[in-house]
Image 1 (spheres, each protein chain N blue to C red):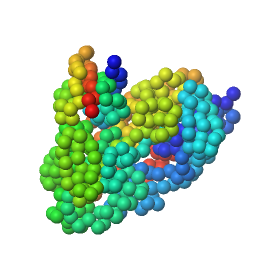
Image 2: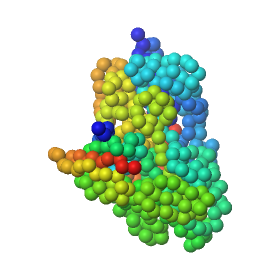
Image 3: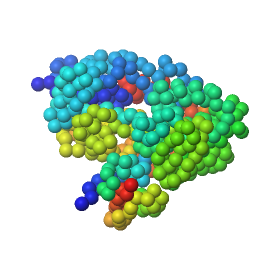
Image 4: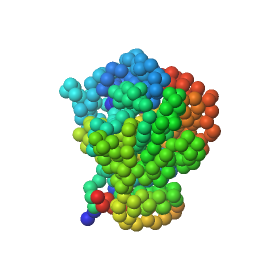
Length: 76
Length: 379
């Protein structure tokens, strides 16, 4: 079972949800996951774009009451 | 019984908390109803934002430092004896010298550190200005630079999020001033898909880059530096050649946080409004040390520290909370050697930087000296 860490980046303008995700991925093991909470709708586009470029794995992305819940698995 | 306030760390955040509490708890300190103790790593206090000017010879090194004992209110019991282990449950700290200190309130303000050693080749191949030794070496490298490829390489996480753009524009002006800008090429790399994580700042930077001929490479997270080939390669698969590599190294929290098992990466899990350590009622975390998703910057430390001062003073005097931290951050942005702007935001208000001006640049230069009033809790 992969461990999952949550980053609550709601209202985080700087450094922002994607930067928090990049920093957070450095602190977990391969196969583990990070769930990012973001109120920036741009996260729903820029996080998957970066995850694809660097070849980690998108697990899920959904909006609940104005908050995006984006789960990424560390693949390398 | 006196309320004992124990502050671990003597940077800006810890210093503002100590001096602010001396002001608000003057009566309790005089009557023996409260004590304030600080454990610091050095007897010198450094104005870290001033390092930005060192590579260009725009600040005297002596301006960066004051004796910490003189910056602190005399009522603070100050020990140059860094923490070796922090027990957040018992609010007890063991120091490098083997002494033990306890508090009724514990404030963890140990800060962050640069970790160029976390990226292969970066220590050997890179220059930076985030510590004095690095800033001196960068100054010397610039002095002998006669043109070529400069890569300004930004890594995650880092403190002072506008500094990468500032150093880029200051480099441009410096090269222009020496008459070698037309023989030079500046390429700026950034971890996410725009020039700065703040969208309005990124949007402002685009035409500035275009008009200055500054190149950029976004979605660039450094994998390794090859000092022999003089190349820097990203996790995303891009390799750039350089003649001078100016890095913003990745940061981590302090070793004592890791050794005390207080948080991954050396960042302590912290409640965003109370600034309490998660799971603790009388342990506060301030400045770079928190894991909060906000800027690691002096102004963040300042506004957080002000909140903690109000709350500890209120708890000691009246056993109630005063207020919550709203996520406020304010940063000057130097847009060259002669102009600047600023940006502020909080958890609910997005940033909206104004047009750069010489006046704001001058105000920033004035703040380089006013800082010492902030550290003393006066500004």
